Image 1 (cartoon, rainbow, N blue to C red):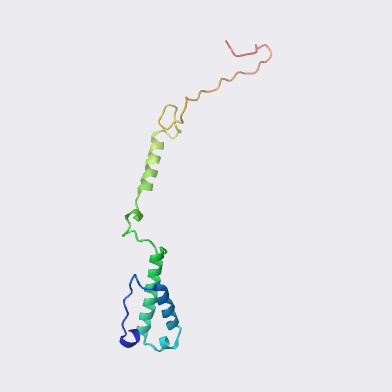
Image 2 (spheres, rainbow, N blue to C red; image 1 turned 90 degrees about the vertical axis):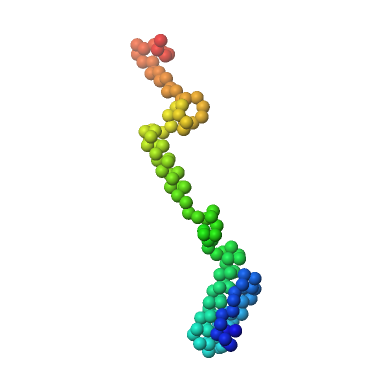
Length: 129
């Protein structure tokens, strides 16, 4: 078809793409390819690329298309979550979670330990009364 009419044959999803690549590549490195006019050489190279693209797509190696798969479309959800987290920190006074707040760790509120100075000269041992 290429040599006779200078036309590109259609490429189908159901072609044996590996066989097409092997045959086209063998043809590309042969004498017949070099004798083709430039536009016919371009057709052969275009066919090589199209069959390569089909192999990538069918094997899952091609770049995914966000337009055909909504789950791959870019959103700003991460940016919104970061912004909300920053606002929450700013509103809490950036002191971390306060006891009794929704962000406090579970369990009873922490109490400050009672520190008793060691007994010294003239001081009774034990906690103050």
